Length: 410
Image (cartoon, rainbow, N blue to C red):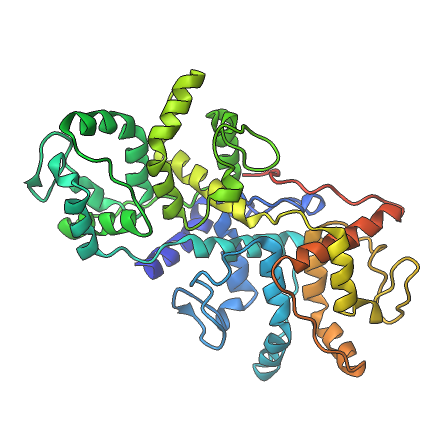
């Protein structure tokens, strides 16, 4: 199911968003939230990544399948993984007589956001598990499916049309408060949803209506989701970074997992949210299916934004990885490679990451000549290193560009 959905969504990228929906203009390449997470699929195919790497079984087999959540980590950690495996990829390029693809910073940003996004898709739901959940969660006390069940709530047969659990999530959000009152009156315990529960329930609904035309929802737009987060007053209670309210949990720090795990958390915390909104006089914000998709996508991409790197730790990384053997820094020797604090195209983290990828083959040759081991980055080290390098630019002729969590476009 995911394989078919991925292929369908890849076509929708071109059909709906068009070729101009990239990460941002070259002068604003530090944007971290993409407008269209699937835009990078064009690059994944066009740059030849698909020849070696599959996405949920679609593509080559010489490299790992990147649709299995192995790159569900912050942006600079994904860049670190690509760097760590660069020598191995270089050997494959040689064996296949392929040219190592080169990227612009905006292209690298789009590619990394796509690789992160594919980790958000849950495994296909289990219809048998969904059937058990329908009984265990006492859904059948109020709702009917396939002609069986209660009549207090609406029939759920039509949800079998929907390929994405976002439709079901939107309905649960829109009607959740009314459902809570009815469940309390009927003394039905309020269910909680964990792991793959929503996907399993939807798979069960699909199994009842097998011969219906599927309805899809476009991938969520994190930039629009960020606007919704503010406009629907979510930020009055919840913080997603340094800003926002303190009454609710810090979503960037606490909200983890796939899109559907995030959706399940929204249901589970519903009563607490309603109580807080009543205290503050905030009306329950209505959400369309498209808006729910955008909002959940934004919440998922909060984990894509790296915690701020620490320059002091980055200096240690710089020394331990022996970067100074080749690269010069202000007052530090190094004559083989360019001085990192003065490069005109090294003013943002994305420019640094892109330069590292584009010049990796040259660096590998030089390191072999110098008998240096290829440095391997662990989680957080790439962010610290780049924070250190950018801190050195304060003494250069131009200051570093400020990182932005939301940029232009959409």
